[in-house]
Length: 93
Image 1: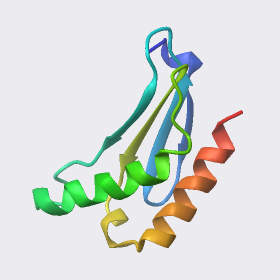
Image 2: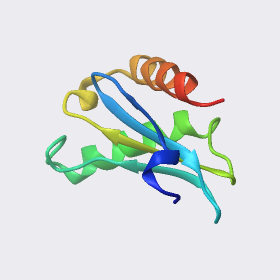
Image 3: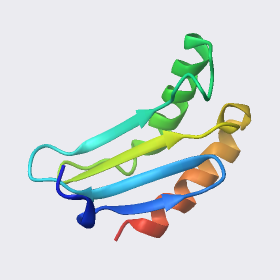
Image 4: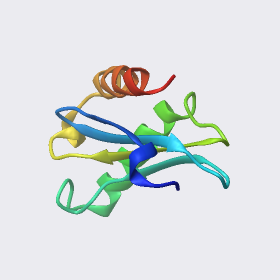
C-alpha cells in the first residue's frame, strides 16, 4: 500500500472504507473485529456478505479495505449492499 496521503476514505454508520492505488497486487480486504461480533461464525458470515458486494469493485491496481463497525451485523443483505455501494462509489473514480 502507498502512503496515507494517497488513500481516499469514506465513513458511514456501519462501515469505514479505505481506497487507494497500490504498486503491488491490489485487491479487497475485509476487517470484522470481535468488538463488532463476538461469534466467529457470525463474523465470517458478515465477511462473506461484504466480499460478495466487493466483487464488483476489486481490481489489481487498487486496494479496497472495508472495516465493519458495530451494528453492521444486524443489517439485511440488501441494506448492507446499498450502504457499501453508495460509500464505494463516492470515493472511487
